[in-house]
Length: 340
Image (tube, rainbow, N blue to C red):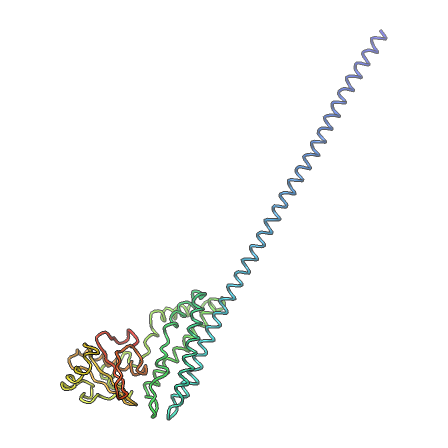
């Protein structure tokens, strides 16, 4: 019996030892799996951390690059704007100092030298405008576009007889100079608006003024603008224009003068309606009598614009052997539309 008890005890001990071993093995496997899982999770976290860091670095680089590009673009716009303002200020200076000093003198000063200075300043302005229009933003662009064709430099260097320029010619010069000054002021405000430096209420006023400029409010600055036929005749007299020999006081040709002009000028301009002759300090005008009153007034208007522009324009011209210049106005010429 004692032997049976001992055998049973040994069998129980063996079973306990076996289960203990199984539990130890399972625990060891669990510990190993846990350790492996921790290492795997740690490795995944390292990968994710590296990817997030790379993403942040890429975003930072993009932000810095975008900021650098914006800064470069702003610098380019600012530089072109400054060049434009400087060039326009230079034109203003030449007109205010050199042109004005020449034309107000009696006798007239060195207008040829002043004209050369003006031409140089005007060419520099055109270059600055071309560069500015490439980068110009929404407030400056319409004003720069207007300025690119707006200045009529012909009226800034009028005819200058030894006795001095005519009163209306000086008036026209002054109105063109005022236009330059006005455009300089508007451009300065527009540039401040484009760079975010202008007060919103001032920008609203600027927008309204720019619309006026775009619709042509400042476009016709001629002394002829808005005048009637009689007023235009008086204006021509103030410019020193006299009737061509054989024409009446209102510049209308006699029948004999019509026949003479047709013989002389029909080969040059078969449909001419008026003749203007310039020699020395003398300017003569004659207009055909077979025109409507409306067209007659328009001829007067064209003649005024031609004289105030220093007889520079697209009117048919013929130089005489005596040193005279002839200008033939025909039906293709219209007042206030094209610069004659």
